[in-house]
Length: 433
Ligand code: S3P
Image (cartoon, rainbow, N blue to C red; front, side):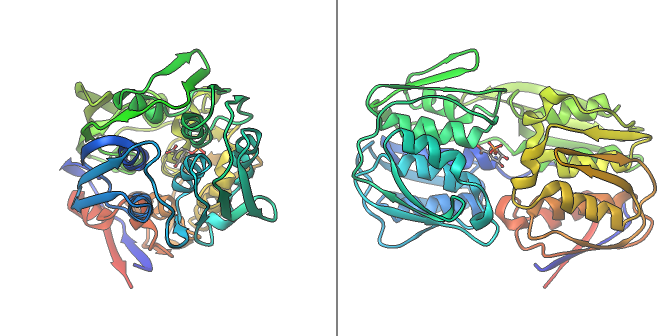
């Protein structure tokens, strides 16, 4: 799929279930691989990112069988992984690369992690530096970029680390390394970030202590296999939350969505903008809260996005910027510098795309100001970023003319079947190439 062509559409209606949570899918493979015994995973995301993690563990000797979204993993135990024959290809996935780096730092063998063009430009010093403080030996490219070679002969020591940025990837990387270190490691986060690693480690019988901002793990604990049911990804649901909010006369229900409080910033922000979102049948599965989410159209208004919600909605800003373009008045985001080092520079790429559709935007170093207005049509460049492609597909619901979105193949990294599902609910998109 090289491009997505969109015509103005809507309303958005129906009941759908988006694919499995990407963050939880990565973690399910990592932890079940190093557990003792067989784990059965259901609801696994069949996207390129999580499949890269799956293939990496197969190449480290773990027997993993997959039938669509059901995965059976024969765990090899904490010290049972073997040296992979080749380079571990992480594709577009920052999560896979950073989490695996932490795990590999504690192995007895050397391994190399590589990524695509985008991933090879993303900052890895944020994980390399604390891992080196734990005695890991890592070779990187200038500026701390991938490919990364991890030397496996080191004996890791525990760390007390205050993260300079709120990052679940850094936290999870260090918790995985901490599992292989001598002593107890404590990671302190400046703001809450997604806690799937902590929850899942506990599900595998591992003790992880949380004390306010501090998370501690004792090295050498073994994990016991368990079954994992993965909820639908709120980050994928976000595109439909915005779609049904902005398209007049919409009424859409999203089933079985993960509503872990460290991920629901998108709902809080949309509600502050005046959205009509209702959580139904809230329940808990495998240590993660889930719900069905009903969303109906609403007249959105611009807001100043509260700082505290930024890390809790970090992947949802491309979709939220579309909501802002359709809202009355100005929406202002600040304190979101991290958006510049995601799969693309999401502040600049979204500003360029919105600008080309006639929306007034003012990017700043750590955010953006967006004036709600009328969107025309045009051509949008995604720079290979899946979430940019999906955000502008949703924008077409309120555009006056057709939108042509370029470079969309990476939609498959997080949301295979996006175009079909979007069409099913009334978004007039077609994929080409
Ligand atoms: C993720 C954490 C977030 C997020 C990414 C997935 C994870 O990154 O942007 O898509 O699964 O831990 P940071 O923790 O670096 O902000």
